[in-house]
Image 1: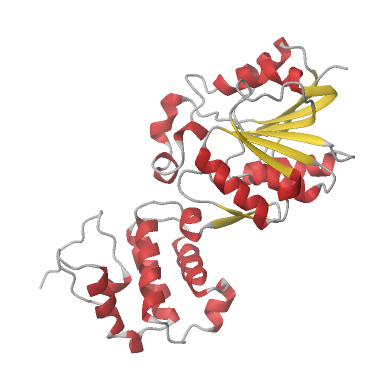
Image 2: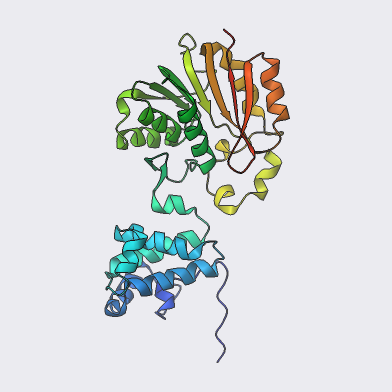
Length: 323
């Protein structure tokens, strides 16, 4: 007998892996009931194997590790803890939750949204759909600043804060620093404030909705300004991985025709916001930075420097407001 091929849009799940018949009318309650009847046969190991099948069928990279992260997240343990309990029975409701998460990942929803948080510079940062996921490249930038700035800034500004990862990491590292973080997205600011609370820095972080042209703090100068602006060229957006293109907020990605729209605004406004000799740090896309460097040179900043990341790509532009 020939088994019909499963549609690429119908990822294999735990329930179907165990040959529980699903019909077009099957709903969540029916699937739960079916799964509950065989819960005695389900172990953590079986569940991980079924989850792995779901992810592999969807051609997810690092499927083994992601299957284990999904299971560990629902079980409240670590990947090492999973292996120690590989033959233990698993509750039917948790098994169904893992199945649901695996299907979400198979549809190319980012793993970070499914797990609900990421680690960033030693801080726990919650993320959800509508908020840009913090990148390792940005984490490298914050590590670089924390290791190279000799004395903590009294006041710092984070432009386009998103999840608040940068603001929270800076406040966590510098006990004496007060951080103002701005963003245009209300959903992002809600998450950012929550992350400040999770990491116990609410007393030294202020989150405001707006941009450099709308917020009334132009008479307040900062010792440090950090920004991770949108820098992807509009024409390149359709070529992004589906995890990014379909799920992360476009306004946090799209840098306009040449990818430099936000850099123009930043180059124009930094000087009015920095104290004399104040430092700015601006993330770069990793491409040749000639255009961005030209914008800041035209505004006569001093000590302009391009810093390469660990992979040798130009990742950070720093400079100072002339004294």
